[in-house]
Image (cartoon, rainbow, N blue to C red; front, top):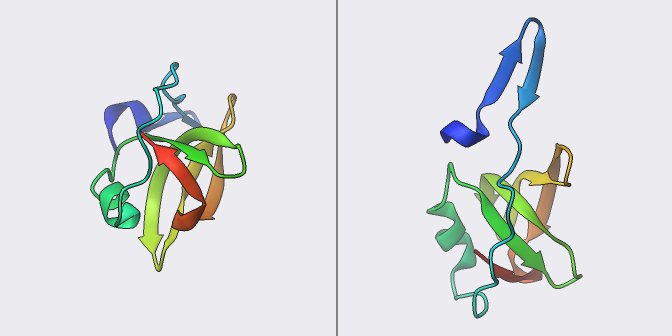
Length: 92
């Protein structure tokens, strides 16, 4: 994991470090081979815009069969999230 995504362990509690505090500008669309492209960002934060109007910082953990699984930042904490690559409108 990159330095900014590492867990902090304090005593017996584990804490995630927060996502970046900015929202990038959307790219011009999703290129063919989205899963391969995001796979190359392993260990990095990716900002995603979904076709259902959701957008969030995403930390990919697994990319398999057109499904992206990892952690999404909801503004206050990381939560497990999974979505299909064909639901992505754009990412950066």
